Image (cartoon, rainbow, N blue to C red; front, side):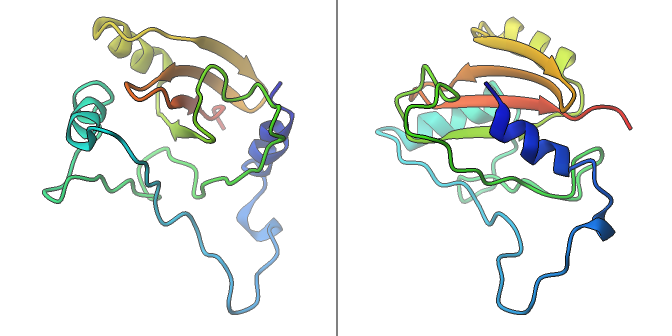
Length: 146
C-alpha cells in the first residue's frame, strides 16, 4: 500500500551527508501547498480550529522545516493514477503533515469529532488519515523514534 512512501520515508533515516550534493540550479525544498476551495476562508478556519495550524494575517500558514522533532525535509512523490493511496479523496493529491505525537494528535481530532479513516504503523513511523471539509485526504505522520 505505501510502497512509494516506504522508500521515500526510508531516505529520512539516512544521514544528511549520505545524500549527494546537487549542482547549482536545483529544487531546494517544498515552497508551499496551494489548494482551491469554494470557501477558502472556511477551509482555512477549519485547518486552524481543527488541526491547530496557526494562520498568518494574510490567511495562510507558515510550516517551518526547523520545527522541533520535524524531519529536515519534505517529500514529493508521483503515484499511479489507479493508486488507492489517497482514497477516498476525489482530489488528485493529498497532504501529509509530520506530527510530534500521533496518539495525542488523534485524541485531539477525536475530541473535535473528526472521523479517523486509517491508523497504521510500519518501519517508517505511525500514520493516521482524515478528510478535510473539501474532501482532500490528509495524512499525519510521526517518524520513528531515533
